[in-house]
Image 1: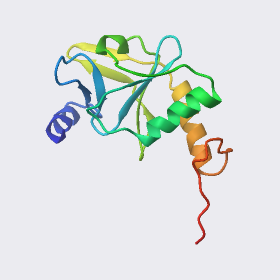
Image 2 (image 1 turned 120 degrees about the horizontal axis):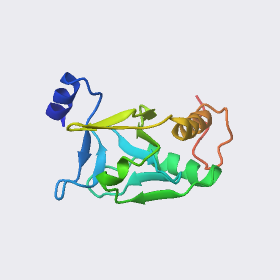
Image 3 (image 1 turned 135 degrees about the horizontal axis):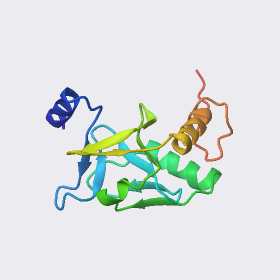
Length: 146
């Protein structure tokens, strides 16, 4: 993971995207975070795979998307060929919550994504809950005596 990331950064890219190791056609994850996207129908899509660690941040974003905003949430196999039709793509994880991916380059092909509106709204909602600025409808937060 470190060598490909170093090589990608040397070429001006911020991260790397990994596909499955058997067929090389299903999205797995970014080098240091989960892949999330908003497809052409407005669904929140994230790859379901047994080869990567589950992300609590991704799980929380899925719950907010489906629960608060009534979005279709799809945790499923995601073919690389589908990604070019996505409206938004982001990388999510504990440290970043969710950051926009403006484009993904595959050889000579550059796939560009639109505004980060929906994923930004989900990120803002999660951070609002974490900071106590929005109601925690999910029972995630606990008050700790200090």
